[in-house]
Length: 158
Image (tube, rainbow, N blue to C red; front, side, top):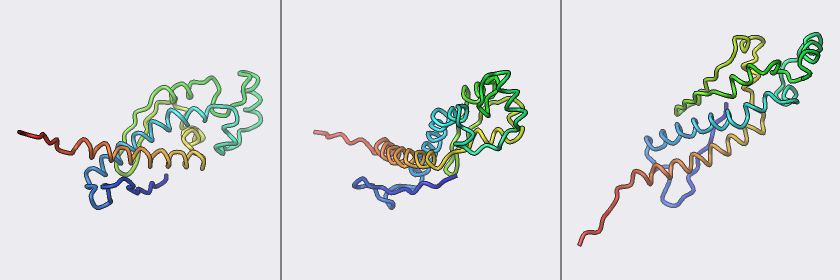
């Protein structure tokens, strides 16, 4: 979890002039965008070689590692046959509020064993930095878009 500091830099858009409703709409849209971005960009990284070291998964037993290597020829912690990976990567329902983003994914029942779901959703400090940067940029863009959409149109008569 991280916070995003909001600074309006565009001329005419200041903290005081941005209404609470506009800010809430922009934050909600930003949270949804962050969730979708994480699902597309970072979730698949959890199912690649080297993910255990990158994300700090708990150590698997040697007996399990040998069996898995013998049966699949692969040594990727969250992948045996790929069912969990395929289910989690293929579907996500993302909803955002002004306070958080919720990403619902489907997975097999064993996703709950040994906190595999938690392992699959961890982020690294570098990913957090990228998500934060993306959130700040998208939020600024969204506020500007909302303001432009809510301005009344004026027509010159005569």
